[in-house]
Length: 379
Image (tube, rainbow, N blue to C red):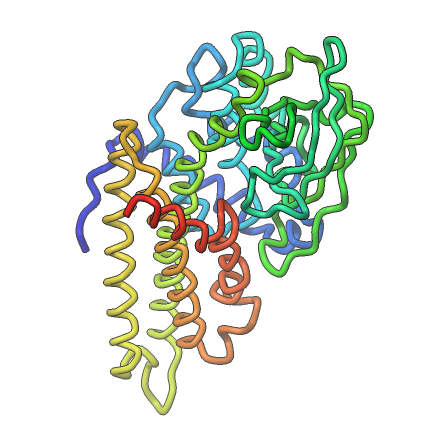
């Protein structure tokens, strides 16, 4: 295997803290999270106490001011633990980024320190029932009346939605005929009158993750809650989506490594026709194929991360990483289920949970078909 060179000793020390957290606070309670369809609210504060939330935010706003490789460590360890329930990365590396990169000083001071401690759980409300990946077609509106916006509409498939204390909401503040130029972002507190949450959605996989619908019925939002400038929402979304897609690629690469590792352990122990399943040529060849392809994915993702650290990552590279590595993860997990035989279909085995949990990676963050469309525009 090609050695990784991205991380230093401080990153690896942080990794040990993150690994202990996922191994002791998250992984043993998988069934509990699935039953209640979200993690316990108190875990957000525990994660905050350990410095796992919003670590890349500047120190004056409650973060540690560290580079994004610390975020990468957290995502990799989440995947390694087989955790599909916690929404820490979206909170810390998507929602917090919008506020830090585009918010006013008042907004940063108000929200980021509380997000870093876990006292505030953040969500981002983009997707709507009728739009999917087509953000320019959103129907949610925010009409300015004096010093307040009046927000109406609904959002669906919102991670952290059920527990969120605040959501960055994508809304149309101008004439729909203006297309993308009529879209803005608003910071909306969850306790505002008219803001309601649906019950956690019943999903095929990722059943422990907090995912729900959000509804806005004449929600009055102060004009000061506008994030950035009115009509600039779509541009802000496009600037942050490349990193969001890289986040998916990061977790998919680690998820594939995790799936392979659990399968290697299984085939070495499981016997068929008097010998370990690992002794059969078909098994050895399948393991060799998967290891090779996962290594290729790892090298590409790490190269993209080098570009992220330099602020040089292209939209096309992020799209390629998202689509190719998420496709690979599905392929790897399917092959691993096959090598487990009938036990691969039993939920007591990690590979069976991975089979239903990982499929969504090819859909969210923009479907893989959209990724290919975006890549093709640069050809």
